[in-house]
Image (tube, rainbow, N blue to C red; front, side):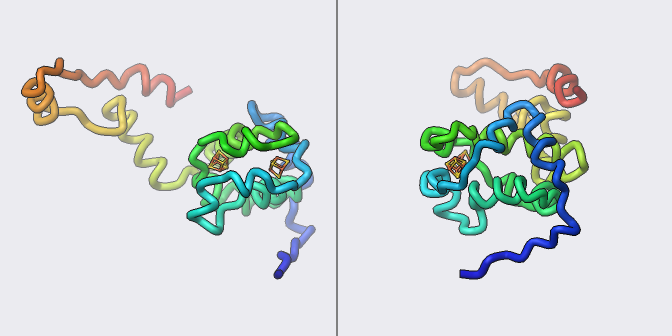
Length: 158
Ligand code: SF4
Ligand code: SF4
């Protein structure tokens, strides 16, 4: 097995504490690397590059840029399987959200997420419901849906 070489001159020892200080991020300091989360993760079964234990290790080692700018954090499906099996109550799904919040604050929102954000701002939901969709709804005996993006915009701005 090849082990990655970590260049300690480019690590950030404060990074793990920064993640731990975010809501939901505190459990990451309790991980002892047993790998139960890896065995339970459905995303790992389909995407070999995704590995919750490795991800935690990167945070603990202080590989800030690799974690925040990399695509892996966005692969998590937030299914909570890892949290069910973790013996240390790390609450990995919540820790990933903490890291995502940091990534967004530092300008690492991926283009697909940015596009979703634009749709939410414009329509208040991820899909436009216009005249065509409302006509179909009426044909099915459903009430028309109006777009009310104002509240979503306020949330996104905050
Ligand atoms: S199951 Fe928990 S303690 Fe074990 S590697 Fe995963 S996060 Fe760490
Ligand atoms: S919450 Fe994320 S990391 Fe945990 S099992 Fe589900 S997909 Fe995997």
